[in-house]
Length: 85
Image (cartoon, helix red, strand yellow):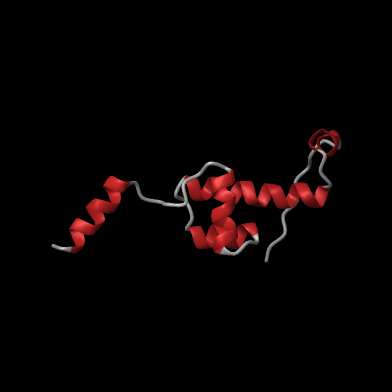
């Protein structure tokens, strides 16, 4: 595992009411959710980044109002149809 560090204003912890550890965890989850939403990473990889199992990550997706499905109904129908070819 690689560690990165970022600089944040000291006031952000008070503003958000979070400790540095809490904020770091929340930032990892938020980044994983966004990368998943953009289709950059799989749900499994996003869960790993967030430090959660897949079920926990799906709960987080719902909390962030992000669909746990990477395909729309139309895309899924097209994929299924292409399997029949």
